[in-house]
Amino acid sequence: MKITPIRKNGFIDYMKSIGKLGGQNKVPRLSNDRNIANSLLQWAENN
Image 1 (cartoon, rainbow, N blue to C red):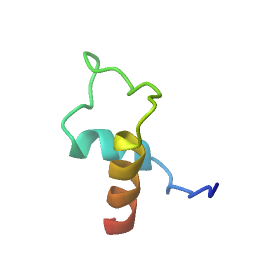
Image 2 (cartoon, rainbow, N blue to C red):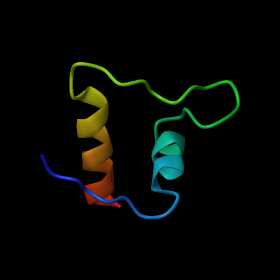
Image 3 (cartoon, rainbow, N blue to C red):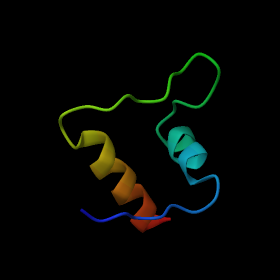
């Protein structure tokens, strides 16, 4: 297992980039697949 740090406010910026920032959108829940983790890692590498 590897822990990858994200810059300050990085998760907020990620949610904004996928169009899910705001009061009517929920934080993604944990899941058995890596879809959310992979997209967050890809976003972190590009920013």
